[in-house]
Image (cartoon, rainbow, N blue to C red):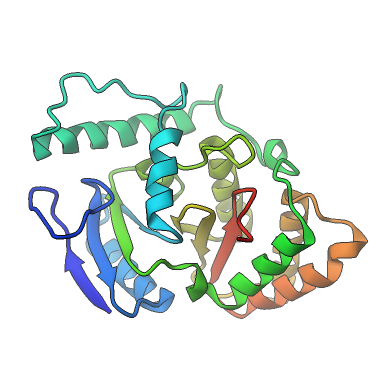
Length: 256
């Protein structure tokens, strides 16, 4: 894996996500390597939160741009000079801070119960959920960016790349409710996101009881808690207990 430092004041042959991009990972990229890079950055810098991009980075950036135009999140460009990297960076830092503040606004904040059952999910989706958690590397794009954002908590890191645009998908506030639940109830820290997937990581794999509690929550979340899906949820519990990473689809077509 090749690790390239990214500085918004410099020009590159590649196009970073935005001025919050801090590292570019390319070559043969594994989730294990990505986690190691994230851990190193987190230990050295307690003033920022770090997260990574996952699947389909181009689509992820496209939908994030539209998600940020949500009336609850939109920030006025003001006097931003888009030919000046410092001006652009100041705007993107201000935008992330605004999104983080909105996510914490009690009038806008959604609960776990508000999200459960809101994503149309099929047996195929649950099967892909199982297979992706058995082989987490499959969710990585060929290039991964590590983003750095100045927010006080890991759950608010999504403010640096808010996503959830189409009406049939979870929006930014719904995704944040899921992120909070995974941390508060199940001990998973927000790891990153792509065009269709959210990523989480624990300090250690869950034991059998914790994995069972996790998938009980996920069965409710995806609206598939009936007997017909129980075999698949047991398989997901086994996959979750086998590692520290958890991957959850947040779009209608995440099985694709």
